[in-house]
Image 1 (cartoon, rainbow, N blue to C red):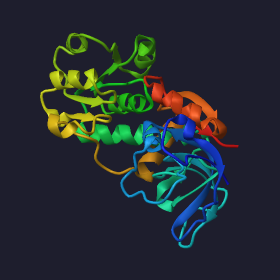
Image 2: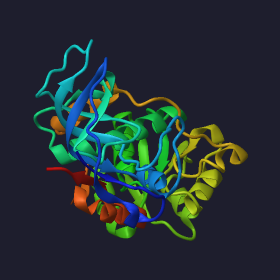
Image 3: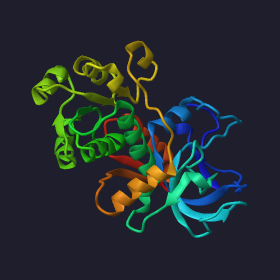
Image 4: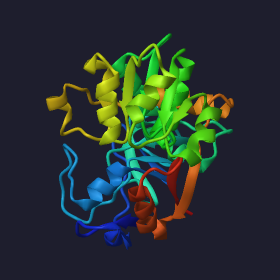
Length: 303
């Protein structure tokens, strides 16, 4: 099969389309013919040299940990799925490819009203967002500060927090402020004086913060949120212990993914696509994800 993979660590240019062995579904697994795969900073870190916990094996390595496609092979013991089932799901690696093999518990049915490109990139945004909001206990009556609120995780976090009855203040560049208002957030610009601008918008204080930007955004969260147990950083994992803030806890699940897929299909969730790239341009997709601060999700499509 064809896959976008790398034989050495480095910049986006190391991602190349290669011919690799087609995986086979074992007991409890399904093989999916991939139609779309989401692109994340996680993938760029893997390409640059980071090895996720539990990953072993030699190079070349195929990045990508979220996908949508059609089941074409079912392993022994799998029930409820058959060749031809349209699904979306998640994996640790291996999704920038024509085929991916995962456990049957790592996929959920794709609703008819969910486009392939959105389905392929849905997992990271909605699952990370809900796990982060659960970590800080965000709910009814809270004021939640969400940094990088126009990105894929931020977009989901704003909407989920609003569904829970929270007031949301979202940081973003000025050209994304109208977008955040449409999602239900009160927008605020990055830069010097951020904490003071948030205080004006939240005279009653900020109860919790989701940091998807790091740096000055995390510093503003430390100034604004009294209880550091209610601050979660998605980017500054190395500093979290010394600062006394949290990182996300919990596992991705097919149940959660299916729930948000249905919300999208029913028009109750917005998920913006920033851009799509064919498999042959995976390196360009990584260049765009590493530019940061873009609105919405980047997805690789596979014919």
